[in-house]
Length: 403
Ligand code: PHE
Image (cartoon, helix red, strand yellow):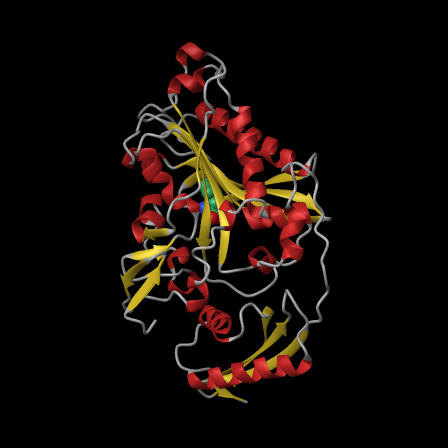
């Protein structure tokens, strides 16, 4: 954040006091794993596109959904938040959760950020895939870059009509002063929402079953600023409920602002790593970034539907080390996680946990347990000690007092 410019995808951007993209992160912006042939994320993407495009052929015409997977991840805060009606004080806007390039631009935190623009450009049904960026903890399932696929389907009133009880008298929009149903947006009719909800949920169950076969699933109520009502879909996987996607009926205000006030619609967004880890038994999210043949060759299949069970090629030993220090001023945990990713050899930390926390006077001490494990080789004990010493030195440089 002390650089005066940030070089990103071949261009320079002025840095300012809002800049918090880390050097570690910048190394990931040009990898585009979802576009890399026979990469597990690309295979899952292809399977989803295939499912969505096959199911909705209209009398042999072109697929209903078009797909865009090469949209730049550099967006404005307006795209990522305002256009999606995220309130000014919403938690998701926090500096500690997002990567800001400067006061105007950021790396998108979700693919939903493109929905308003795509709708405004005239699209009714589309899928988008891309890399998204969020500051988060360090463990086997979290990485500051991951991949999402989002989908929108809009309907004109006449498209919903054919599913209505009484098509002739069907209305998608509620009359002024009609009794309010708290479970839906006040501008919609209950019947329109029922039809869309059925369309949304059956599309998603079909999609998930095409990936996982017949599995147990459940719908959970959720909250997103851009949809109402909203749901999450969980599937029973290895005896655990796994959340696979978020979805809901698009807020009408978004459609009004995107110049299609007479249409209604639904949207969903899902994480590709989450799905791929479950489908292929991939134990660690860092593996997706591996350029090791032993990882990549396991996904070189002639057919994206071939079942793949990832075989871990080696179980490298993990080494746990603790560090306790008095916190420097203005310490933020996510800052520390980025710091760890930045200062230590690339991706040698598998996990980090706050294991002790106490205050004395106006000072606070944190103790973190770091689990070091390389995903492509053995770390010796000496190597782990050395990495850990580096961390202690770096902590001291930012004003932490190692105990
Ligand atoms: N953008 C949401 C997320 O990242 C997912 C979502 C997309 C939810 C579209 C509802 C509609 O979690």
